[in-house]
Image (cartoon, rainbow, N blue to C red; front, side, top):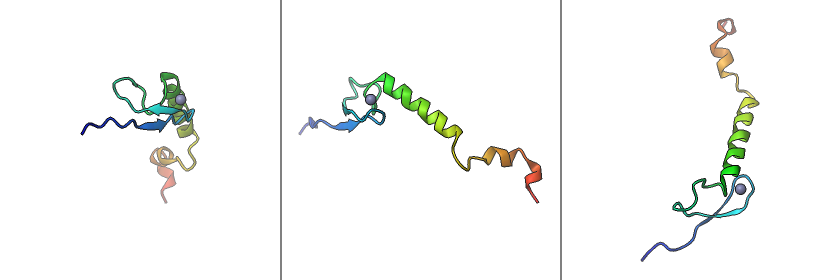
Length: 66
Ligand SMILES: [Zn+2]
């Protein structure tokens, strides 16, 4: 029995259906390189404004400790 069933995923960026074919799609789960890059950019900017992301501040501020 061969796994010939097509798996289709939704591109995280544009929600377009993407056939899960690792031999053809190099940007899975994205539909294209463009979408993968856009998502990476969004990820980076989200990280910048992540609420409560003050781990580095506490680490570099000795006065924070009582
Ligand atoms: Zn896409």
